[in-house]
Length: 385
Image 1 (cartoon, one colour):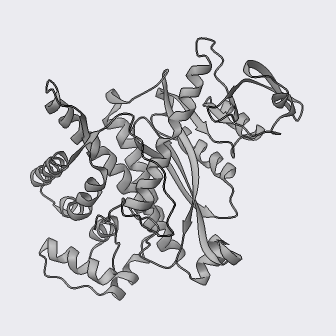
Image 2 (cartoon, rainbow, N blue to C red):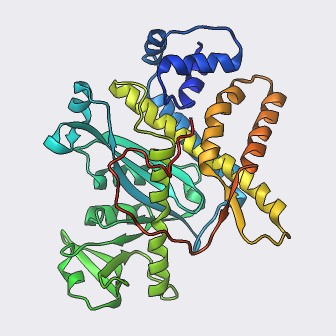
């Protein structure tokens, strides 16, 4: 298996035994080649995990280049959300030593994952997998640097939404230094000056290490009675309290993205047991999630065009779980096709398959929460392999 096909094979998301995956792969390509699991393991050690990181970065820049005219914004900004999560790792000592542990007895190898996610355009702008000793705030600085390094950074205004684990004066100064705006949820005791403010909309100057940082503080009560505090760098009075309440709660799609990455892409179902294998699999999954977003977008545009003028009860959207399953089965075949005309036709066929599996969008639908089960995969998250 040459370098290119090895990369494509690893992008096909191996969620079964490596030997079975290899036999399925070569069965689809019809090449009549046999490769053992041991040969594959040796071959993948020759590929740096940074290769998959570079591929991931390319999916981000190419998305903003290809869809420049269709980029969604709110109040003139591309809106991003930052959030972290833990990733369970195979129970191997080298992974414990490198990434750290958590869980009962603090013995389970665990990594810290983090995403910077463009919530309006469904793009994972940056992704990180770091040792548990690296806190979310430190990773936020990495996200800022990556955002500022995008090819399209100078063309757009940026706004990042942060939960209450992120705010710090250093982070605020770093954001303002990059001319990146923010909305942050802050906890009590972050600033005594903020704690003393009454509910409402306030312009303040936060003092830290002899420096004064202009900010805007918005305090309001949630429906459950809890008091919420937001700070932001946006000072225009035309954007009032209701605007910021709606704006902050737009960060919810990053939770949905984690659901996709963990339950549909099964990112924690790693195909290797070395540190570099973990990083290879992590960034391969990030490449796929952005490729899936692009293909879902293409299919969704065609679905909406075909539905226009029809008097359907509901609007329809692409089934994301089905889309990921299609990519698993057909992506490697499409990428390995050297004839450009045939490859384009194969991409078109993938879009057609996505269009045939749509689900209705039922507005204001809610389901009561049940008692959580101690099971890795819930029956509502069907496996797509």
